[in-house]
Image (cartoon, rainbow, N blue to C red; front, side, top):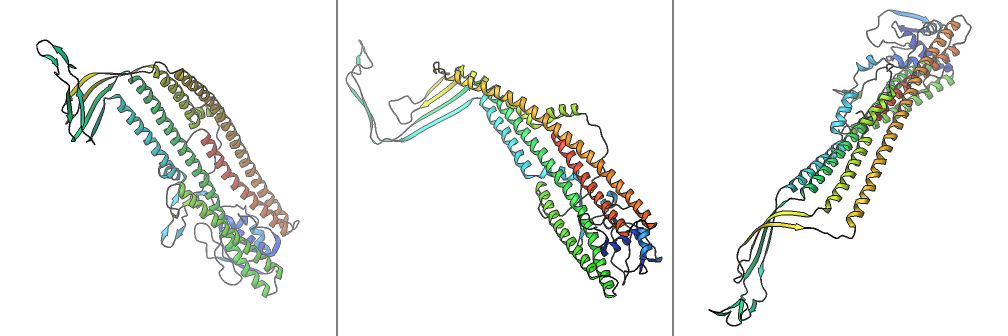
Length: 525
C-alpha cells in the first residue's frame, strides 16, 4: 500500500487511534495478541466502516463533527502517534454504561450490595444460622430442668390366672379379747379382671441445681461457639464474594477491550481484501489479518465463557438463581494508606473467629471439669408421690406421700477422679490450642500485610512502566517524524504501551484482591 493512498476519516478525538489500527493489519505490529488487545483499540472503540476504503471514528461521548479531512497514510499515522494511548475506558465512563439484553437493562451490582446480599442470602450462611438457633433451643430446653419434674407411670391389664394368697392364722396378731387374727388360715383371691397400677410423682431438684447451672453455662458457651462459626462463615463468604467480584470486573474489562479489537479487525479485514484486489497489499497481509481476527474471536469466546461461569458462581454465593443477570462496576484507583501493623495484629486477635472459638473452647473445657467434680454431690430432691391399685380389693386404693429422694454413689473405685483428671488434660490442651491460634493469626496477618505491600509496590511499578513506555512512544514518534525510525518501530512501541497498560490493570485487580485478603485476616466482614 503506497503512502499516497487516501482514507476518509471523520474528525473526532479518536482519529489518531483509528489510524494506528488501520496500519497494524499490514504486519508491522503485534497488537491484539493479548486479551487487552491493541492499546489504541481498547481505549475507545470504533464504529462500522462507512463506505469503501473509509473508517469512521467516534468519541466516547458527544457526536463527531461533520467536517471531513483527506489525509495521506503517512500524515494519518504521524498524527495518530502524537497522542498518548490508554488501555481501557475510564471508571466513570464504564460505570455510566449498562449492558442490555432485548428490552431489559442489566443492573449494575456494586461490591457493597454483593457482600450484603451474600451475608443475607447465602445458603451456607443461612444453614449455619440455623445451627445458632438450634443451640439456643438446646439451652432453653436445659433451663427447664431447674423446675419441678412430673412423672406418671400407668400399668394396666388382666391377669392370666387369678391372684390369690393365704394369710396364716394369727398373722395379724393375737389379742385376748378376740383371739388370733385371723382365727384361721384365710385365702384372699382376686378374680381375673382388669387391674392396674398408677404411680405419679412430682420432684423438685435441690442439690442438682448446681450441676444444672454448670450445664447451662456450658450450653451458653456452645451458643457462643455457634455464633462464632456463623461469623466465620459470613467472613469467608464475604471474602469469596469480593475475590470473585474483582475477577468478574477484570474479565468484563477484557471483554470490552476484545470486542473493540474485534470490530477493528473486521474493518481491517475488509479493507485489506479491497487492497488485495487492487494489488495494493500482499496475500500474506490478508492472511495475517484473518488469523488475528480468528484468534481474537476465540479469545472473546473464551472470555465470555469465563465471565458466565464467574457470574454463575457469584450468583450461587449470593443465594440467587444462577441465571440472574448483572454487571459489575469498575473498581476505583487505590489510594496510598498507612497501615499500623501492631494495631492490625491486635485487631485480628480480638476479631478473628479462630481465636474467639479457641478461647470459648478453653472456657468450655474448664466448665466440663467443674461439672465432673459436681458429681460428688448427692442428688437430693423434694418429692410428692401418689400410688393407687385399682380393682385390687386387698390393697390400699390411694397412697399419697410427701418426702425426699436421695441418690448417691459413695464408692466408684476412682471413676470420678480419673474422669476429672482426663478433663483437666483436655482443658490444658485447649489452652495450648488458644495460644497456637493466636500465633497462627499473627502469622497470617503478617503474610497478608506483606502481600498487600507487594501488591502496592507492583502497582506503583507497573504505573511507572506504563508511563515509561508512553514516553518511549513519544520519543519514537518524534524520531519517526524526523525519518530517524521506521514505522514498524513506532507500532512496536505502541504494542509495548498496550502491554504495559494491561499489566497495570492486572496490578490494580491484584491489589484489590490483596486488600480483601488483608481485611479478611483482620476478621472483618
